Image 1 (spheres, rainbow, N blue to C red):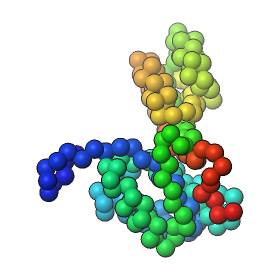
Image 2: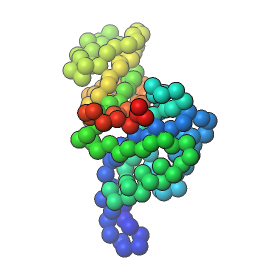
Image 3: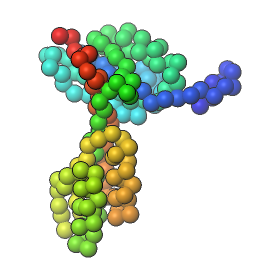
Length: 176
């Protein structure tokens, strides 16, 4: 990506941002609009309840020039329904993704597909005469690797969650 004013190349990195937000209608839209207005594409976004009643945790992964991440964080913190925001550097985060992959696997290919799944510690969660549905969790590279090896068999459908992440060690975004 080029900076239009200077013509210099901006180096983008993948960032993980974790936010505690009030569990209200419209919060997700306001967060997504903030990123859209800044011209950033959200690569993944997961939202789920937290132990604190009335709050949810958002994990947002995006590509953004490193020098702009502080500004993104400050703008998120200004949103009324955002309670806390924390950037999670990759080295200081435990991040996982879940994928369900429906792959063509008739009788002739079934054993091969199951062998590939075992290498990636994927589980078979559904079986039909023509297909298998596999569940895999791990980092994006692991999921991408499984998908790449399953592609020759024919991927019929796939659903990926995007990253869920927590900081390593004792530090916590929780309010308690």
